[in-house]
Image (cartoon, rainbow, N blue to C red; front, side):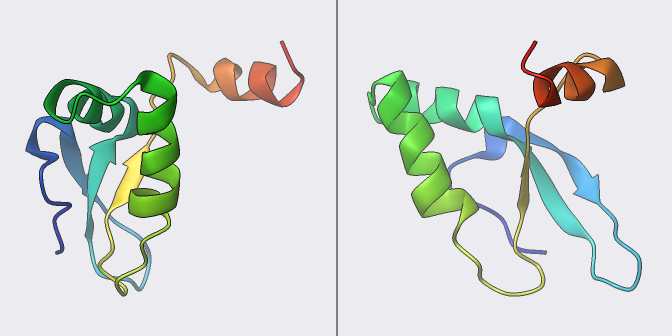
Amino acid sequence: MLKADGFNDAFIGVASRSGQPDIIAYDFDKCVAVLCERDRMEFDEAVEFMYFNVVDAWVGDETPIFVKLMGSIEDITDEEHGA
């Protein structure tokens, strides 16, 4: 499994997918917090950095995933409907 350098504090577990190797999972928001604290980025800058330089960095089948945690399944439905 591949690790995302510098984001150990954002580690949340290992994700499994059918027929694929297990991959490391990180909390997206905690990664943003790491960038804000460690690298002194502004929040918006850190979010943009995460999307363009971390989440979009494909390094093969063992590329880590970055999860946006939500309180419940209803949060997804609310988000889809603009609530």
